[in-house]
Amino acid sequence: LMGYVGFANLPNQVHRKSVRKGFQFTAMVVGESGLGKSTLVNTLFNTTLYTPKEPLPPSAERSRTVAIESIDADIEENGVRLHLTVVDTPGFGDFINNDDSWNPILENIESRFDAYLEQENRVNRQKITDNRVHACLYFLQPTGHALKQIDIEFMRKLHNKVNLIPVIAKSDTMTDEEILDFKERILSDIAHHNIRIFQAPTYENEDEETITEAEEIASKIPFAVVGSVQQVNTPDGRQVRGRAYPWGVVEVDNEEHCDFVKLRQMLIRTYMEELREHTNNVLYENWRSDKLVSMGV
Ligand code: GDP
Ligand code: MG
Image (tube, rainbow, N blue to C red):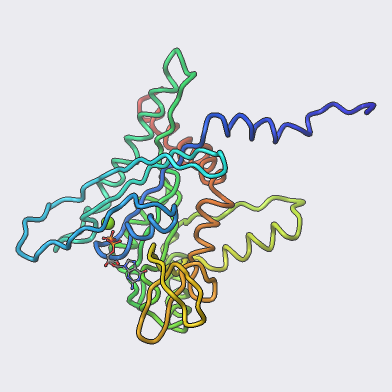
């Protein structure tokens, strides 16, 4: 082929290299106890990272601060390896006074930035591990009202440091109409308080299919989710992941029933790389330059 330079194969090269190295992704979950965070993580990655815990009796000694726990898993799909870290934040919002609940979470995110910066400054930068948090799923209680003070506070303190993805927890406890109303109120609160949530980037000259997909995903924010790794039988004889009720079955993977599929697209299937890039190019970069300025560099 005259004049064919061959760089059209670059995407494949990148792909091959990434496949060999594997991918690293860190997701954080934040929200009050019992909102289904652990269940949703299991549902998203189709694993049992979390095994069900017995609920604590009311008298049991509970921690008085927000704890930060992280779980690692190597998962593989069609020969592609993903090193996944889930950062959980038990205790958030569970106290009588939740004023500073966001603080240990912010500190954790920044200490991961610090660890990255330290690796960048090393003489040998061959093997940098990226433990920065690439996305934060923020679980909203399915109240149907509006954002609570703690939600606003958390998102305002964190939106410059992490890609925020708000989700409506346990959306099977609300009717479709309640969900639509609630979403509208959440979005207007988010706008009113100038909170930035993660928006998938759009590029010029993109094909219609890609644009439609992006719009469909964006239209579901905040995602109304249902989590379950149980297989249940539907009245018409299918086996699905879902939650069974006397009145019927809520199917996790059915887009008529909830936004789980769209959330998974946002987080994993379509925008994982964008989440990683935005973390590196914008969130981390801003943090880093602020830090250097504050150190007088
Ligand atoms: P976490 O404390 O936020 O990690 O919540 P868990 O994932 O441990 O779930 C707490 C309880 O809520 C468990 O009994 C789950 O079975 C239940 N649960 C989890 N997800 C959902 C959901 O989407 N809908 C409903 N109705 N219940 C859920
Ligand atoms: Mg949990």
